[in-house]
Length: 533
Image 1 (cartoon, rainbow, N blue to C red):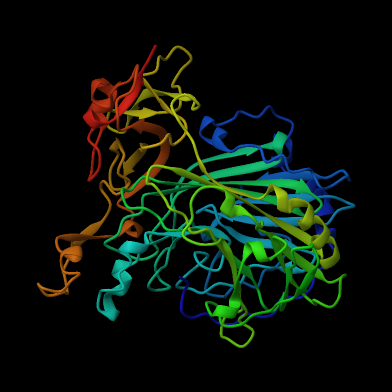
Image 2 (spheres, rainbow, N blue to C red):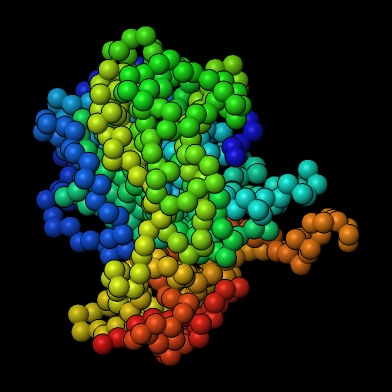
């Protein structure tokens, strides 16, 4: 994974400790008023279980979510050939006169593309052919069996089977970035949380499809502690082989790293050559966290801890021990120290997987103490989502474009009756229902196939009959979602592929059958929903 080249950007100059966030123009910004409003919860995000993690901060502080892009009170020294406006979705801020302040940029793919505090910008400066799709904090996974290692070297990218939360690489810097389509988002002031849902992307045009949905919730615990919870759902028939939060920091800002010991202390650990044997360690052999720091010998130097946990292998089934990987680029062309955790899962397609981790911002001494407190709240487990423990979402009919009907979660008026009910969470074995719109017209439709009208072309099999992998690449399609033939409007909910008690075929719902396009996936008569009462 990862782009190949990057120009080294100017080194970031240290900031004064968060003084800028106290400016009245920032405090008086519109989104602050939303904190006083009653939260309207999106039922799609009710699947996140509470962690029970304690609020770390004792001082008064504020958490704000800004949805409008405007120049920030900082200069991240991004690569001069990239534009931050392309990636911006929201800005999360922790503001306090007594605690360490921070500022996080969430990209359109749900990824963390900027992380700023007293040390300056922590996220690497980017490269024009991978703008905020590799050098970010994001969830990744892979269909290992499908990876195109058996293709000729020049064509192996067409067999890419990684799935990035962030989006796709752009082969040339002139191409518009394509970030993983946003399907839903929610701000929850009461929990000091922001949640986002995206359809993950194979990062290059490929014969392999992504059937991965990434749910992400960011929660402010106070005093530099940030809880990150992922739910990964795979609706393709091919199993995933791992779930792996991937990211890192600018080496120029944080040149050294410490790794925790099982007793909660820490040791200097700054490996090179990411992927070599000395660059990873089983989580159970650590204290459950690592920290990037400006000076490992100085407990008062700035640091960011990643809290990944110790005993994640007690949940579910694994191919091997969960591990932490890192690699320093101090002597390379990229201003990037990679950090990644990997849980090698035995995935049964149609099962949701939950993983929870934490960031802690502060001095090395502070983050060590706070990280040790948070280790017990890290978690990995497959989720048992069933029709019995999953709420229902009403779908309504609305007119779209030229007058055709399409389904929506938005009630068009107070007296409107639902057309049917679907499941809010990915119950075991279900398929997502997407509302999609043609980009070159006004026609909207519903499908369980996000590639239903995606740009594509036939794949010419380069292998000869008799090659062991010939059949694997015969009669295949090369998918090019980045050409934007469609717009992915929202996730409506989930329909089951087996009929249960009280369920009916989606084909029996007139509004659904009229606007349904199966693409290459389930037809409407093979999907089952609840009738409207």
